[in-house]
Amino acid sequence: MSIADKQKYRPRIVDGQVERYLKNFGAVCVEGPKWCGKTWTSSYHCASEFMIGDPAGGFQNRQLAEISPSIVLEGETPRLIDEWQEVPPIWDAVRHTVDKRGEKAQFILTGSSTPRRKGVLHSGAGRIGKLRMRTMSLYESGDSSGKVSLKELCEGRLSSALTGEVDLHNLIHCVVRGGWPGNLETSVQDAQILPESYISAIIDDDAQRIDDIKYDKRKMLLLLRSLARNESTTATNSKLLNDIKTFDDDSIDRNTVAQYLDVFSRLFLLDDQPAFSSNIRSPIRIKQAEKRHFCDPALACALIKATPERLLNDLNTFGFMFEALCERDLRIYAESFGASLMHYQDYQNREIDAVIELNDGRWCAFEIKLGANQIDAAAAELVSIRDDIAKEKDSVPPSVLCVICGMTNAAYVRPDGVFVVPITALKD
Image 1 (cartoon, rainbow, N blue to C red):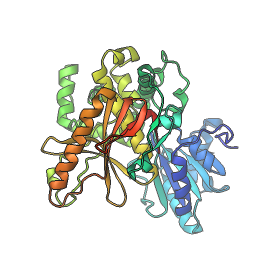
Image 2: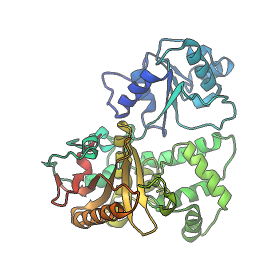
Image 3: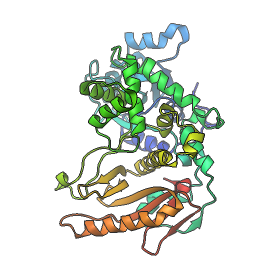
Image 4: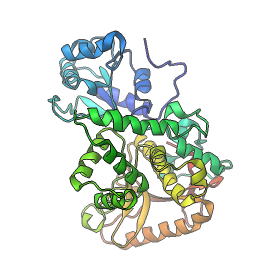
């Protein structure tokens, strides 16, 4: 019996990627944060299932997997093995079975954490394709009309259209609520209960089990709060250390910060945005700091107690959270057609909020602004940076310039050639 009711299943953008990977790999591993819908999506694409975390019979499924990993792979294909990381030898068993059968689309694995290599002998390269799943974008949750395709936008195509009025309260609700499927119908008053519970589950349970090490929960929370205060910035580890001391009157050492960041990353709690260079032969002129992001901006809001009311009265803070929302969505849409999301920051203090790099080497530059009154300045900055880059030797300027805006009701092309698109009208 399938976990996902195929009649009630809400389509996800990653569906197309799952189908493509099944055609090309013997197994597909769908990874991502807890509660983002991995099991439902994987179940939708499978023909049989094995749930390692099923508590029935005193967790007999887990016991069976530990005793004989190969037995749990028997069943109609594609066969779903949910939360495989609970029994790491499953990975090698899947890889071996794929080799033995020599067929595609044999297994779908899901995982909400990445175990260390101990107990996993083979990378699975060429046999097991990995896909990253995220919380829902605004288009997937029904909060974007989808009148504008990012893929077409990156090809330089945009048809002007009225996209509907945007209510600031609704935009704030989308950020505070997050993109978890189980939170979509939650009221504004209760929207932060799930993100708060998520943080508690990570600190109290998942982080303590991932390496079988009892980490300091208080220090983990201090670091998470610092990351939340630095959401959508390029804060270094040193900046996080100083931030903790300044705001929490406490400190943790540099090695502990690095260790905890690794744990958070392997739990898919973080989803940082790498730096981009338009000149691959001159990487030193580009600052290489990644932009800090949680897997969903709602987590940052929950950690700093940024309620809808507080964000409405602090639009500067909301601006960072709104940027995180837009960059989450841009990443989901871009990856659906094989593109990558990055950001640009150089030593001449030129910055571009988001860069989408296409497979053929072209790249598109995006500035993210909450208010329509910021569009002119953002467009002018994009044009200036493009023209400067075009003058530099061996550099490739962006092929598309676009301002993603929150409070605007139309998608259009400006006289200077810069696109303007509301985030509430964007899709893949």
